[in-house]
Length: 359
Length: 110
Image (cartoon, rainbow over all chains, first blue to last red):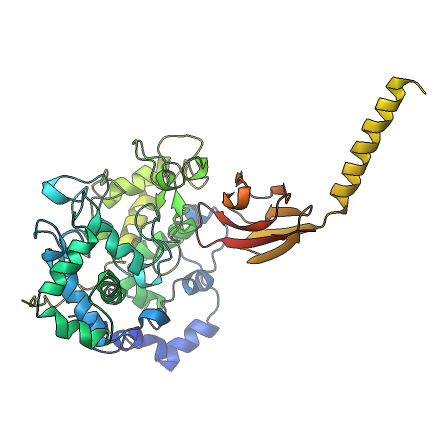
């Protein structure tokens, strides 16, 4: 079980307290603006205010839970139980954890997800890391809350393929679930609403533990290599990565066509006729990227080096392609530094207790 | 006065009156910066104009299909678009690229 489920959903208790050390706070607040040696090619002679850049990557102190589905341990425990329960699928074989497996940083390590009948889906399973802060769900943003999102794969005929009324009946007929629901949502029925609310509460506790990058942001200069530090500057300047992979979650929750050559219209499927979002997909987080290949919405690139190389040229040109995409002119050393930086986003694994499923 | 002159005068007057009526409507100007609209709500009257400026460094894609309005316009940085509010109703204007950008526009009868 990870810490936020077991204790308070207050992240600050789980992190090293470097930001609370007076000496480091002093350095962060009053230290002179720094420039990084070796980042000159990235900034084309301009000095980069490293303190200002680093300030954009500070992590929040608490997990936001909505008022109408507040965090309680009982809700999170119930949600985790449902999350691992394959009886939420028609076959009885697929649970949420099948495609969003904690052992793969809440993805599945495959180019594309595998759904009902072992059939390959159209897109890669996205990670669930840090979705408590997300404002749109799925690669195409067709849901805006985790409560709305969780019901979709259950009833999707190509995914878990279980109509919601059947799912409700199944869960109601498992006697061991009754006390879990009444503890989590007293006075409420066992139905699709309480099922999805509990899963959402659990999913909000899936937060990346402190990575070397976070320790560097907190003031530990030795937490990441000089190459990675140069990579951070490139990420924010000539690499243009931070235009979309913004903030501590490394996503702006927005949708861009990055020029990948495939037929999938992405957000264009749900907003037909809007050219700007044809072939556009949600900016994925980069947290734990090192562990979550293959990459892109259909798993078309295998390594981080390939991804960086791809962005250096930017794929095919078409009217919908984002203005952020194009020739970057990154040198081999720039690309190496970028990959070194991306690897600093790898957190220690989230320890997840596998629940004993009720009968 | 010849028949042609009367027709010309009528057309000119109509155009002039239309132009005056159009100009008389208020313009409600909304900016977009840091992936946000400068306001989340606008209240207007039928005959007013909604002027949306992109003061951002990124392209936005305005859209709505509410209340008989059809807005679908990609806006590069620095561009401005004007939409005539010619029907009453309530519309939600969004950016298709940045879904957190949402603005409600209430158009009341004159």
